[in-house]
Image (cartoon, rainbow, N blue to C red):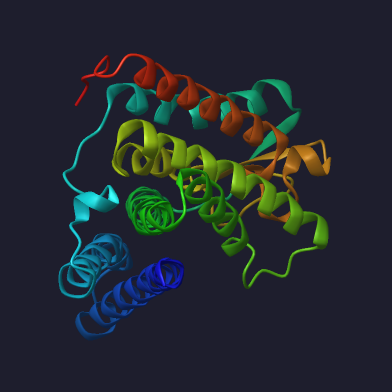
Length: 287
């Protein structure tokens, strides 16, 4: 029975993510159509409402249905560790620098207007970065992790949601078999990384920050690194090398070997920190 409950909670958590996203999109679209609000304001509203709806739905579900506290799922109280704040910046910055300094390419401007560039940056920071990072961590490293750990063990809770995290990134995508395989491998690796951060830090918030900063810098729309110019980005660093492993295939550099190396290094650091805590409990008292 406990296994079915864990599976049910996992499914409902993903449904919560989808519903929250749809509600936020619907409300912001109505705001645009009814009041003629500028598109950037609607994007800002959507980025605020998405995690807000997810949090409210989750709290209602936890309080009224499961009789659990959000803290049991690593969601409350809010707190960050300084080392993960630093690594949140270093990881995407290091991957970006590796491409710009090592892989040949050229910069191509999309020719966006200033207004369009402002909207792109705002959406990249608020929605693609913060909102998506927070909600996805709440769902995968919060509810699903806790449900599977309670029903099985930490190893299952580490691996299964991470594989699921990789698989959901190819749903609805018309990718080749090779690209799908790359996405699943990279998605699983980054899922393991986020889960290890959640285990080490004791909550989803440090992982949410790492997730958000990755999204802002890598796919936020300021500078895209790709094998072809991106009209939705302010500028693109167009790679001269077309190797599948370097470009990441159809999904982009997030599934490249360079990004994968970054995920593995951060995961290794997280494992070392976890072992340190177990050998010397109470050694890290960062907020």
